[in-house]
Length: 393
Image 1 (cartoon, rainbow, N blue to C red):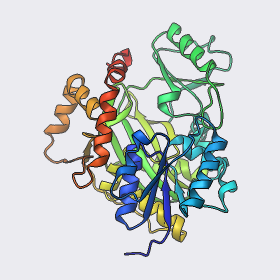
Image 2 (image 1 turned 180 degrees about the horizontal axis):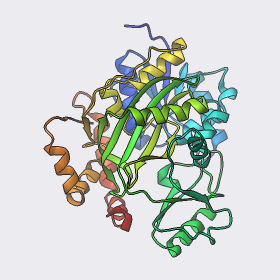
Image 3 (image 1 turned 180 degrees about the vertical axis):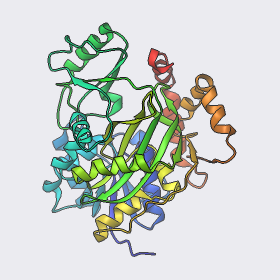
């Protein structure tokens, strides 16, 4: 085994991808500390592969206080490397990376680079320039009153995660309401609601390319599709499958090579009526389905660790195809809804005998799943509302 002396802080300990990262590095012998906001939701921190956990003021409350907390944790716990998981911590740490350089190494892009991906409009413009297909998109600087295109549409904040920065509109009235909601929201380096994007709604399958770059050079990539999402019209993957799609991977790599990316990212595409995958956005962070990537043979947290620790890593572009991940623990209630609302897709996924099926349940490390299950049960009412929107049918 390679000598792995450094200690790593993993942020957003309530996230399932934080749990996947903790397990990946912990199994490799790395000393892992998990950080997050709410001790009651410290999913990754109760893993047997986590040596300690700390709380911090989240960027949503104060980015400056969050950075001070990270500095304190780094000093107190003798942290060498910080691996952010969520978009909030990734963007904040990129923005203040120079201020933390004397304390920890943060393997994320410089903010000038990250912002080209985090700003959805900029990433779409770059993609169009390098020949990557994109959806029709306009900005609503004038409140969207002059929009005369077809419906439905997706209304997106230029910067921000899907859960906080995306609305759907099936009529001019719904579009006006979505834009009014955005006007009341605060904008900063993480979220930008000032000039929302109005984008054609593409109802096809979501396909993702997950990548690792080292200073503009690709080091790893794999592709997957979202067989079942929650909500059904497009969202978090509840059943995901690795796929063979060299052209899709090539499009993602070409885009990020143009930006000169560094670290991990997920490039999200959606297949249009003509079967063409069009770029939706670049998620400049570890993706929610990280565990599937690791299971397929591309251990992104370990690879990123080696870049941070040793300066580079051997490339990894081979992975297992046709590998399915069923999120029976992190998304148990949503999977139940899918069996009701998406019976056809569920049945098709189960019929194919050539696929290897995994779940995210680890019986040798069960404590995190108990917290995941309790949290999911507490959100059943919210999940039900999410599947009642017309575009979720």
